[in-house]
Amino acid sequence: MHKKCTEIFFFEFFSINLVNVITMRKNSIDTIFALSTFYGPSAIAIIRISGPGSLKIAKKLCKIKIMKDRFAHLLNIYDHQSNIIDKALVIYFKSPKSFTGEDLIEIQTHGSVAIIKKLIEELSKLPYARPAKPGELSKRAFLNGKGDMLYFEGINNLIKSETENQRLIASKQIFGKDANKCLLWRQKIIEILAFVDAEIEFGDEIEKLQYSYVKNNIEKICKEIEKACKSFLTVRNLVHGSRVLIIGPTNAGKSTFFNFLLQNDRMIVSPKEGTTTDQSDQSIDLLGEKVIITDTAGIRNTKNEIESLGVKKTILSIKTSQKIIIVLSPDSLIKNNLEKVKRVMGSVEFKNSVIIFNKSDLKNSKQKFKEWKIKIPVIKNFKSITISCKNNTKNIKLLKKCQQFLYDNLLSVDTNTDDYYFSELRQFECLKSILKNLERANLKLDSLEILAKYLRDALTDIDELYGKHDDEDKLEIIFNKFCIGK
Image 1 (cartoon, rainbow, N blue to C red):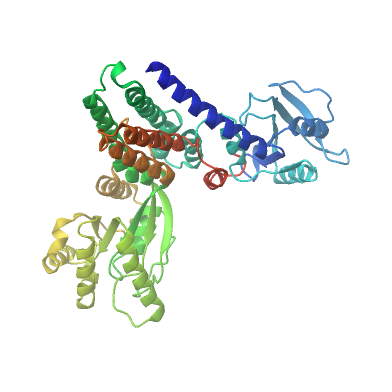
Image 2: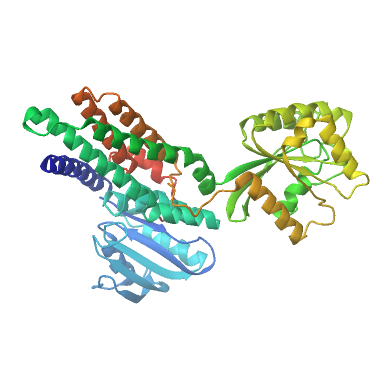
């Protein structure tokens, strides 16, 4: 049975890598280049050149005959007319010991926009080199076995991370929290499949297959995958940002509160009703989590055609949003608003929603807030906080209080657990497919050939999670999400 398990693994490994080698050769004929740092004034700029012609290019640019592997050369960089562009550090990484697995050159120049532009122009003139597409360097690294798809997706998330929670999750994606778990699933399925295949081939000649062992192990893997699927949306929100919608009647102070959270006068604020006629999005770091806050048009009946379109847009956004901030104020408690707000409150009652009682500085505000609760009783079911943004736009103590309230009641997630960190839709679809095939397998314990077929399908899904079976079109879509130069 051990021999059978080894044969299955060897066959799959050989087939996968043969496909990768063929694909790699097809895509690596040309040499590519890209700026891998910020395009703008900075201390240094790094340009990467990868492919079979990279060493030739470096020698041509630097007018040098010999270049040592993995050695920092301080050299002049010349244009095609032999004029010096800059003095730079040039490092040659010989294949396969480079980021891409190909011959790779890194040129570290001064971070002048003019220098970057000139060097890119010189590289573009070479007939055997072309600009890299987004993520093409990482794609070549993947095809050359420098990491699996989970690793590179984690790298991409790390580069894009803006908050501490995003960095923590990306680090766990890169350094194997999810990859190791998948590997354990794969090994256990191969072990089960080896037992099943042995039973099919040798029958009465070996010890009888223990169906309880097969069933229990499949069910154990299924539970772990179900847990990963349940955590997916939370993890995705942490990595890509939670979307929070600010709604409420006109003149409740939504835009003022929006500006307060941003600590920036992004939205126009006016006592005139209907000032906000459209939506505005802004990304902020809220206690370590990325949040995309959306300000919306006030909810009311209006004859203004443009404002009416904004209100309709708000209503549609409420239907698709799961995290909502409702802003209410004493002066917005009027008859024209009540019916609209009452309907909206009913539609968000079972969503993740909180209430901001704003403008507490107004006279009789406490009594008005009580009236809101009396006239719309469902308000009592919501977590709420009472504040005044007037003359407090730079009040750090109040800002921290609001941030903590929103974090605790809309966003709070324990990122210190060793739970699974799958954040991409591609990964989620693979997990669902693995789970589906394992559940099918568990229903066919009495039909060994069908059982084996579903177990093999589950293995294929796990390999696809790593990117081993993805075709060229799929890879193109995945790596196009990366930045140019990575």
